[in-house]
Image 1 (cartoon, rainbow, N blue to C red):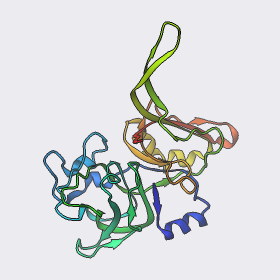
Image 2: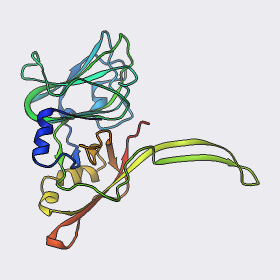
Image 3: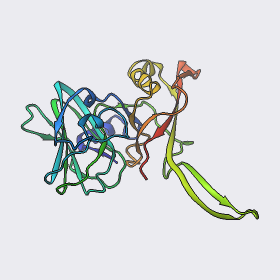
Image 4: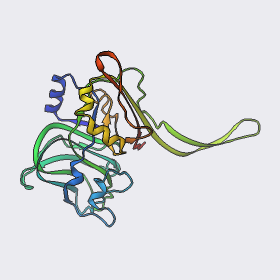
Length: 275
């Protein structure tokens, strides 16, 4: 689910970038001083900022809300926040992204949004300079078993090209391993799912080399090193098609495409899939 503030939506529309893919990978929360609702044993704050999806921030919910606070130590520009590998839909929670100049007065950056499934919740807004940020989770009950595996804060890079024909979106799990029983006569006796997951491939053509060698080069390094990131292929039209991914297969290696020294790029990714 992608939640975009009205000001950010207008800015993207004005630049004709509403449906261009975005990538967000440099997580400022990973280097922040973390605080908020006290974690339960084994559910420390940093579990949500280390990039992995197998461990979680587990807040000790003593009321109707929980806070995940990120002190960046200095004011920094932020226009993108996200969570993934969470269970907020199962505990009936809603999420708000807030910033502060003094850790006392907090400003909402996007509308309060209910979690409708276990997929990523991504928030896009006009970049704001602030030192303190928090993910505010509301609508809880005492003892609610909240779990968040990924909490992200930073910026996004909007890709200068769109994706059209030939792309296969993730509608259901596309990596399904089965164990099937078949009779001697060739009849299906039953099947069971051994594992389920998803992969995603993005292919771009005729990209300006200045972009790939400049603004996008840090992402290519992050991708090749196996780091996690958020991406969406057509965010304006398919707001649910947003994913937390990491490299699967070969490295990203832009190649010369010929015309006007433009370049092609292919990305093969594994997706954290909840469905």
